[in-house]
Image (cartoon, rainbow, N blue to C red; front, side, top):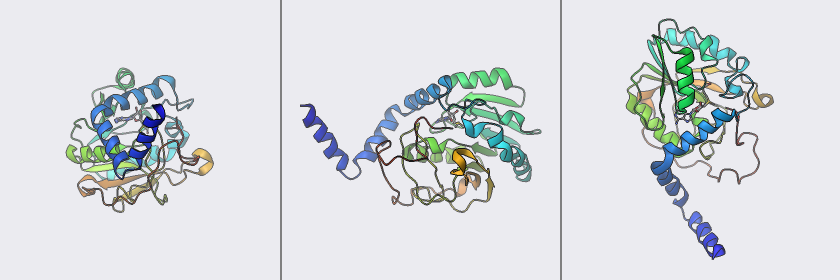
Length: 264
Ligand SMILES: C[S@@+](CC[C@H](N)C(=O)[O-])C[C@H]1O[C@@H](n2cnc3c(N)ncnc32)[C@H](O)[C@@H]1O
């Protein structure tokens, strides 16, 4: 009986489009609860394992030295007056950034994290919201900073998040990309892999600006990690191509850049 079921499941998996369709339905039906549970677990157990930041080693002070210096300059250049930092994580590095008079909203899917941030760092021009970037309505702002999130989501949820960003009416998106990565792999939400947003299945144009983070994680293997700037209205509306490499998360060859739990 069990063997028959296994054989049927594996036959269904071979059918073209069956796996993406299953994932799409699962994400639609249970996605938010699953996302919340995964990332709440990471936060509560410090599963990304950094000594400084619950958001992982990519969020500690040495790894954010370049962006902490560059971000205020870029925001000034763009005349940004309101910023949505989604996800904000534990606000560890951002608390050191001089945002001047910019109205700051930090948002994250993890409720206890948001509550702790609001208690510790909330103020007249700084508030924190629980919000799922994949589907919740986003507050109207000039710029959305989305650092180190899409790399943790499956393709279906990334596309949903991009559609949600477009609905927000914000002008700019500043987000993580790895511009030298040749091709993008799918992963289960909660995993991690490098993504190049200029490649399929995203096909973003050349960014308007690029901040190379000078990332030193994994002995320099993530050295092209960057924050790239795009006008949200210019983001591609449709999936440009399905020429990405598909693979089952966790079953493919061991990879340096797709571990679970992964550093944030
Ligand atoms: C690696 S941390 C990065 C945090 C922050 N951007 C930084 O640079 O420190 C990833 C964060 O994404 C949050 N997250 C995961 N899925 C999310 C979603 N769908 N909407 C909003 N936040 C989400 C997690 O709770 C976690 O705090």
